[in-house]
Length: 345
Image 1 (cartoon, rainbow, N blue to C red):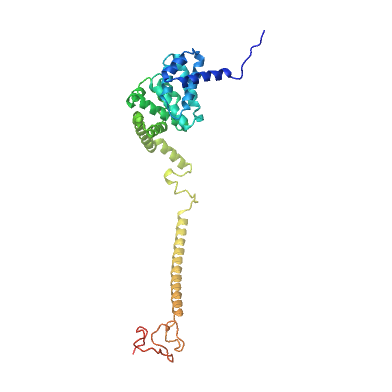
Image 2 (tube, rainbow, N blue to C red):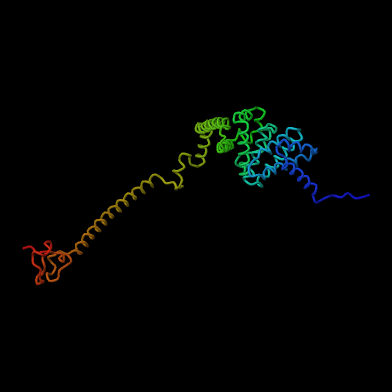
C-alpha cells in the first residue's frame, strides 16, 4: 500500500493565487471578474482565500479603485457563505492593521466602507470596532476615519444617521458611540468632530450634557449631606473627648504646643513686652549714633577752604576763575581770551 504524500511546498496555494490574480488583471469590470471567479466553483471553506486575495490586491494600488469594490459587492450578494468569508477577512484585517502603511489603510477603509454602504455587510459588525483612549490605536483610527467617510460619501449623512438610530442596531454601536462612560463619550465626540462627522454625535452630546448636570446635582447633594449630617458631628465630638482637635481648629493646634496655665501665659507676655520695648529703644539709639557718625565723616572728607594754604591749590580751588598769586598771566590780549575764564576787572 502506497504511503500518502503531503506537499509542503505550497505549490497548490501559489497556483490558486495566480489563477485569481490573472482573473483580476484580465477583466475589464468588476462584474466580469465576479463572473469568472464564480465559474471556478470554489468550496465554502476556501472562499475566504479569494476574498483575502482581492483585498490584498486592492491594497497594492496607489489609490482606491471602485473595480474591487464592485467585485466584492457582486460576490457578497450571491450567497451567504460569501458573507461569512467577508466577515472573517474583515476581522483579520482589523486585528492586523499595524502591518499596513498609511496609504494602504486609506484604501482598505474605503473598500470596506463601500461594502457597508451597499448593505451587504450589516452594521452589526461595528461591535468589533472600538473608539476609546485605551483600546484604539493610530492605525485603527485612520482605518475607521476613511471607512465612515466613504460610507457617508456613498449613501449620504442622513441615511447614515437613520441607520445608526435604528433600535436593533444600537446595542452593536456601544463600542463606537458609548452611552454610559463620560470619558468615552467625550473621546468619541472629539474623534468624529475631528474627521468632519460631528453631525453623528448629536445624541451623544445631549446625553453627555444630561450626565454632567446629574453629576453636578449629586455632588451638591453629597456636600449638603456632609454639612447637615448629625452623625458627622457626633464623631467630631467624640474625637474631641478623646483628645483630638476639632476639624475647624486643626490649624490652631498644628504645632502641638504644650499646655500652659493662664498665669504662665501672662508672665511670659509681660516679659516679651519688656524685651521688645528694650530692643526697640536700643535700636533707635543705635540708628541715631550711626547717623551722627555718618555726618561727621562727611565733614572730615571736605574741609573748609579757609584752612587750606594759598600757595598750593586744593581740589576745590583748581577750577576757580582767579589765578593764584605769582602765577604767570597769559600773553594773549584780553579781547581774545575766553571770557568765561578771564578774571574780573
